[in-house]
Length: 187
Length: 249
Image (cartoon, rainbow over all chains, first blue to last red):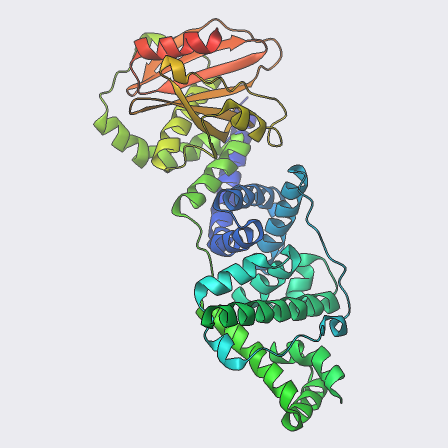
């Protein structure tokens, strides 16, 4: 009896300790997790649900996690949680074929530098939200989290070449959107 | 290197992802080629615009707390010891405001498991009001609230609209109780919020209706058609009983 009671107590202490370490190591990246979830889902409530579920998963696999970059690890879980959440909602994302970068040269005029300089926050936000989800994901990870192509490739589970082409296509579309919006506004 | 080759590498160049040979090739081409130089400048401008645009979303303040609560709820073996510390401050302030109406008799005979569940239900109720996150789906239409739970739970909770009887359905929320995700349906009576927690019974553990009062909150518990129900509110017990009766009918 005594031994088993002691074991239970030790187990609790151990778990408490796990939680403390988890809180100190993983939860500082909650903003990054929320930012990614928020951009993917484009909705406050859904983003919160996704992050909460992702953190539960993260805690579950926490013991198997060994010291790699914690933020990337959490972001990968957030991303996977979002896509499985989408599937549950039966809203399959329309993933595009990742083509060659050359294929993005659609003959659109090169945007004017001045117009891009005038892009305001709202315009940028709308332009980003308008992107396909996998392009949005690449832009958020690169431009907001400052991650390398390798890190993004690991998180998104695609080859580095695909990251490169997604970023190129995403930026091209952003430029076209912003230029069009700016031209429209100035007319 | 021609414009086509440069175009393929330009993003990687701007992102600092090219090796030195690749970088040199791009640089020497860009120096001679106006259109490619413009493209490069545009890419840089876009990056700095996104950076300057302050487009990052910050996690709401209650999210961290919700995450920690969810982790504890999903890992019940460590829940009890940490629960007190996490919510001690929050509950203490509630206790100060609300008159303490501890009814010792209602506690007698309850198992520690049930006492823990009652604690959890009460803290879920308090938390739902403090975190300003009482509903995940806000709707007075039971045909909206009920399907919302569809993909989130392995059962379908009833979402009765009692607006005509003075208990307005204002939405639903996902919560964790009894080591499982459960449905919380939220009703409003004048200024008071009522949480109805519903989940399937374990086995056939049917229990008679019971009522208790804790820290100024009234709770009513019953089982019906294979489901267990907990109704919690600061509403007086007479009106809460009325609500329970309407829900059971």
